[in-house]
Image 1 (cartoon, rainbow, N blue to C red):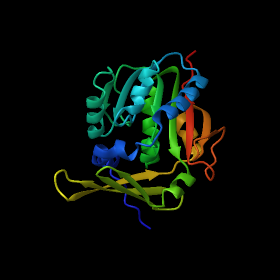
Image 2 (image 1 turned 120 degrees about the vertical axis):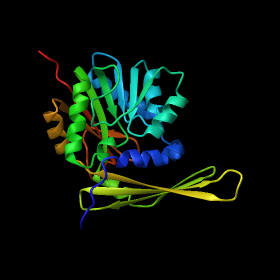
Image 3 (image 1 turned 180 degrees about the vertical axis):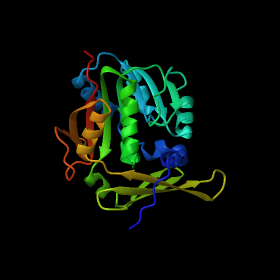
Length: 265
């Protein structure tokens, strides 16, 4: 099968499309509990400070939770529509939100003690060269002793997403369909959203395609090392929400990875 390369801006297009209803799709996600889990991983790694870069911050919900925990937060996302929502919704927090591509030099007032890169952002970097560029840029933005925490979908996670999922909210119906494009590699998630048009009996359909690629822990370790970072931990996230001390591609839906930037001599 011939796979057409994903456009360089495919993530921006996909999230600009779903931005108006993204928070509805994810409304059942327990952001506070997950932030607590991430903070435990951060503290285990022991960064020296609290300056935090939320890389791929979306509508800013995680950014606010870490600001509430005492971190000095800067957020960015490749989607201008997501950042518009973040800036409007969290205007009183003092958090600086940027429209930014993770493959470019990081914005804001670095260097950062902590970098978060969540919601399978690394999987949207379907070309390993783009993943390598992102790790290099994030490493350059980190202080010595800084900590990078990111998640990635496992083989099981992709298998589970092949089953159609329905999300309902008032005036909204979303259908998610996943498909493997080649064994162990590329994946496409199609999001069809049907929204009620205010004041009418009509529904508007919006479709977005999300292109991802599976990356192994071995690939992460190799590319992190090339970027001047050390993979310190790989933790497996079970569908129940429990966390293991290793990543099992067949038993966990996500891997949570912790990388550190060595202290300079």
